[in-house]
Image (tube, one colour):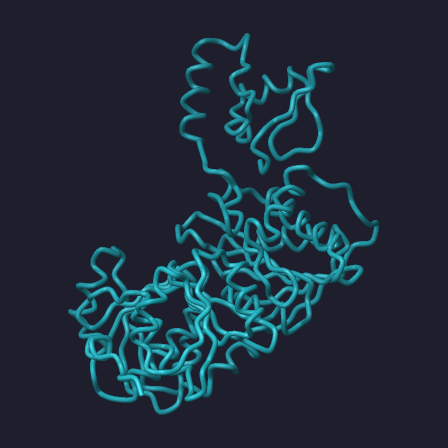
Length: 421
């Protein structure tokens, strides 16, 4: 599939199926319609079905209504239902588009190096393999890392001095959904208006092979440098219990690794998300956390099962990040006022309006900021000298540290912000 239109040439009466680079005749077009060929659901010429039978036309109309999907590219990634909307061919073409785009960048190596990660779900390995093949086909040297969160992927791109990267993850949070997030050098995310639209254009247009040489492939254990940053914070913690609901399996694995040396524990989460607050109270957990968007965002509930507003959570974790010296932070204007009012430390705020992931990264980099927060619940941290990323695991780590400084419940800490000096 991929491309959402088919192209028709008036001179030759030829068609092109969505996601394919070669033309087909009208006879093939009709034959594929009659066989309910999946890409036909998104073809703009699917109503060109004479002389098919009325019965078959009715069945086609029903099939096409059921097959309506949103565009493959969103503002932050490419995503779709696996096989129904996003196939292995699409995954390979998406990787090819990024590889070709990387080769066009003036600051990229020739050939460029790209990193690939997955999210450990059973459906992911074959998609990762298709992505690796697509990058290598464009001549990119490719580094594959084990299952990773978005933050771990971004840090690995920066740590290994890659020119770009792809995470095959689950930003939508549904069982059959697959999403591909893209990064440029230094772990800079690509968003619409900041590079992603160029990758989309290459994907829609298709490319000829830019080189006859297949790129190399090697593997790297990226979780080690990522977890080493956090390990020192997992000492002297209270024996806290948290109810964990996660759409990101690597997050769960990373967290359990960090908790091994502590008395903190995660509790099983109910299948129905509506019962999440109730289960927090029943288990007498200290708080609950729902991790989303490939480990970039998290939602926190206090011990009463009450939702913690992002601005309140941001002010709390800033207490662990900030020292006595003023620090620069980048804040979405929707939550900036409340964060600044609650913070007990001097802050130099850079206020912005609904930034994309790429725009937030650029502001953090431009001002060498310590922290960033957007209204979608992403909290951004400086992972190394040249890399910033939204990281729910860092947020949880700071929350555990803050809760361990006293025996007060989370609700009391939120209701009593620290006084200003």
